[in-house]
Amino acid sequence: MSARAACRLETLAFDRVHRYQPGKEDWFAAGLPREGTLAAEPRVADAANPDTLTCSPHDSAGEVQRRMRARGTDLCVVVNDHRIVLGVVREAALSGGPNMPIDNVLDPGPLTYRPHTLLTEIVKRMQESKGRIRRILVTTSDGELIGLLRRPVAEQFLNAKQQGCRQNAA
Image (tube, rainbow, N blue to C red):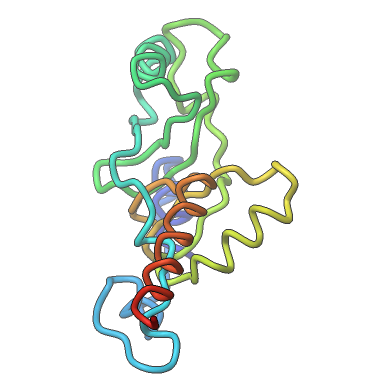
C-alpha cells in the first residue's frame, strides 16, 4: 500500500499499517539525475505549483473557506504534519457549518501523479478529458505533496519548452 493510504489509515486509528519501499521510480521522482532518451523531457514536477493551499484534517470548515477565498481557489489539499496528502476539500463541500472539521468533508481519493510522469502525457490526458481533468496533484511515492498542476500552466510550460527546443535547433 502507498504511504498516503497508510497515513490515512493511521489517522483512523489503525495501528498495524505496512507500506512499500522506494525503488527506481523514486530516484526519478526525487529529481535526481536521469539518463536515456527521455532524460530531458519535461516532467509534471517541473510545472507543478509547490505553493498550493493546504490544511489539516482538524482545521475547521470556516477557517479553510476563509483561506480559500483569500487565495481565490476552490480547492484545498488536506495534509498531515509531514505534508502527506490525505485528501482534498472543495469549497462546495464546506456548507455544513463553520465549526465542522475538514476530516468530515474531505475527498479521500484525489487523483495523484508521480513527479517523474511525462508532462506531454498529462497534457494529452487533460485535453482528451474535455474539461473533466483541470488539475492534478503531484506527490512523491510516499504521498508527500509536491504541488498542484493546472492544465493552463501545464500547456504553457510545455509550449515554452517546445519553443525553446525549436530555437536551439535553428
